[in-house]
Length: 444
Image (cartoon, rainbow, N blue to C red):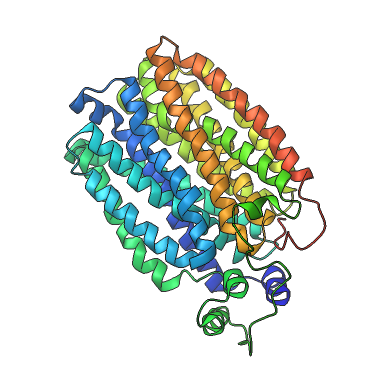
């Protein structure tokens, strides 16, 4: 496997590889739309069903709970079945969940459907991140992962614009129907041009592995193989895949990666879920609140793109730590200026830049840390642990608001975990220098 991995790492990327990365970006856009669909329809849903803050918090967190379950329990299946089949299965679940959400008749039904939709998205995300990393050359790996992460704010921004128009003309149910149809359209695209992982085919050797591998080599305009490459020692999974995240010197990086994901997502999902509503509570109009939420995601497009450009030149650990700390600063600053329209919009844009730069950094760390046999499990569990933080964050915010907290105070409080997250990222960086073959994919 070493030779084919070395070829992919050191050769120029083919058009086929760039198309695979582009499809991964489109799949991540679905995640961005899915989170924002609840944030932007929250006011309409709450008005129709007369929901309080805690009930809205449950709706926000239901999808995140499903995403955590999908990341922890569905994503690891990709290390056994393959990345592509799991992605297709998850897209079917997401499309069905979104379409059915559009006809939900009660708060309880919508909570259940948000959970089901979340399982599909959570199960898909790790495979998408791993395929992006595995089909990128070493030079462009961090950049491609950053571009993939940028799909989230692109989906959220475009989704926000579509949601605003649909809400005005057809009501909140139409937003979910649109999301379901958009997801269903991605299924034939994935079957057409999103390849199975080369690393998976070599490490797991499923039926017709050589035939599948040579088809991919032809797409990349590389000569066919006469036989499957020799596997690196330990390339095949041994025992429980989750236990494999703690073997061969991986325990420390795994624990630090989990901590960083949890702390980042705790702050991120508070910002993404509650900012539109809290801006309204601070005195802005409903439309201005939506605009503030969109600006976070527009900033994210800039942040992910900027991170991708800098990742070619700056060490990943330094770039990610800086993004965490500046995001913490902007989060606290937003609390101080949320009642002033111009300043609030400017700071929301800045929050978005460094929020998604931080996310891009973490998504680049995980595939670089784990061998192929547990790579999707590693990223899936990191995302899943992060989603647990995402679940707790909106619920906590809802309870605190009902208890009399002011929006500004929430932003000060939610900036603190980001500082701790920066320290965890530093620890991942120092924990990823162990010798041996447990790090087959270097991050630039």
